[in-house]
Image (cartoon, rainbow, N blue to C red; front, top):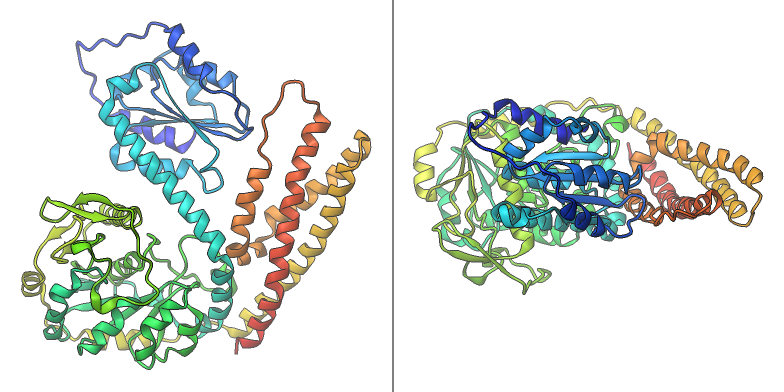
Length: 568
């Protein structure tokens, strides 16, 4: 039984049976046959999402028509039907099948569940089916489901594109930043160091123009956290933030901060922070681990490092950093998540490289009216709302004074928020004392670990070359005994790939390789297909995987050698 099904069954513990409600569980052959006929031909690993559980008899028939690698997510919008189904004699056949996930409809967790179910390698390998008259009976739940599915697919597709387009820059930044990681302060030392103090997150939305100047008068009463785009705008107004966060590898980030590159404001960074900025910025640096992907940085420096929430924008990083510090409340300004007055950013923060969008949607603003935004910005808003919902015991205040409404926040003008939550404390001293702590990272050990990674990747490079030769021989041969012997070698190489933890170090480079390779293993399994044909289809997939892993390993080796020299 999978985790989605278990969580849905747990919800039944709070369900009170409603007397007098009768549910028709008579068999509906017509609906079942129509449902099955809509499946069509599917790949061996196609994902299937079904809206409507009903009696589950259509699911039993579906189970007979799919393979062992097909996974199914069933969304049931009615707890009464879900409860009644669980009492049926054959329910356990479905509940205990490892391919099946049952989700009891819940608006708060639906999108997260879809994102969990649809991996980045599978977002384009999915079919959706609805059962019987569920669409007519549960039209509101159905519309919400379609909206959530669209958002989940959009997010996964965006992640895949980002990984593919920026992977080289991500890895180059990581390699460059290892020397800075060994010299910087760990974010762990800052946990709850400013507990109970109010924080202001300064974002670059168009409404920032309304109230940025109010920050001139707060002195040391609030923790001010900003990102690259608003950093110089604050400094130019005589407002010195306590921290600046930077996560992006693009060179435009450096351009935003270059006029204040000699600042002593602590820079909060991660593996992917811009190379030029990291190399030239004079202030002290605080490192946090990338939450979206394992770079084995903990093992590299032999120190556990905390991560910050990866919600797609640096605003999410700034917010989670404030919570990590123990700040409460957390006050947002410039956090429009919208094109307020048809502007993308506050005028003071715009750059020449900003991308202009022309596809807009309407969402509710802080006054209950409509405001324009984009799918990207709106997705960032939803991720912030999700973060706020999950972060208990922290008050989030939206003092943007414009933009999209952020559910879970208290809307308040900045003037009133400053008056109500001001703390007469010397925040700067607390930050200085923490920055002076020693990080205890052994640079010699880091270099040894890098040498080990280099050796293991070189070994794997040789094994992948061997694997390509095995693949070539199998594809050119029809002798099943000969092929069977070569397959043993293929399986050994695959096992090494799966268990070679040093591959985690180059995850930025290889993640899209594994995602793309998964597509190469997709094929429609024909009933009259012999085992040799099926084997050769798999070998084509392995050949693609080996060849492209080899390219990325060869790309990484000279960069690692340079990195070893730079760690001093």
